[in-house]
Length: 344
Image (cartoon, rainbow, N blue to C red; front, side, top):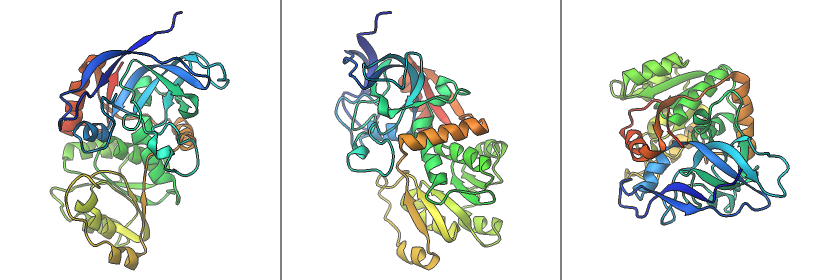
């Protein structure tokens, strides 16, 4: 079968504060090099970063092909590739060069959909070092949600002090990261407290195994309520998305010598002044850790964990390739529980 020579893809010809310029076009495919694979992309999932890039709130290259999270099928491999064959189902890591160990200045500058062209395209040539095998029990749509949301949540819960059975985890919201964190926490035997402004979303979180749920609209002092639910101790791990608006309450809700995983969110985006966090950190001996997705090695560990526990991603809604702008609009509405997927 002849290999494709071109690919249809979306790109952002200009950043105008919205995603209205998202445009479908066609471009030639580059030749597959010795250690690369040509992948037919079957599904792409969206994340908050994609909205921020389109709005100009996140640095990116001009004429960018957006999106970082994909699942697809290998249709050709380079002459030096021995670990992959045509027909293998794969995801790409968020950072193409982050294979194992700690992040470096070089590896962090290899993110899909920002520093390098993204995956909202029919075909993509990718270095095989960045590929991971899709768990057998997952569809392409489900697997497309793994590279950022799932791996971020897994990284937050798995290190450097892994969550253990009986721990209490505070999870804000019902985004893709939050729902993966909930599913992973339950599989690890931990107790999850989930917050949201929607009682309907909290019902869904409860159905997924949340031990407690809190509506932060009707319970604005949710940190005090977390302390009550934990007999005054606090949560062992708190996931922090809100930045300056929520960090003080997150620290109050964390136990002494507890952990806070800081996950993007409003940090560096909103103009809310940063609170004075030094005394609470010192007095409670808190450990704050920034989460920057994860490596290929950690991705493989996560996939093995998901296979062992039969974990399936929560997909809020799927869209056709031609409906990419509608998918962005739906994500921006924040109506979803779980992930938004574009089928290609």
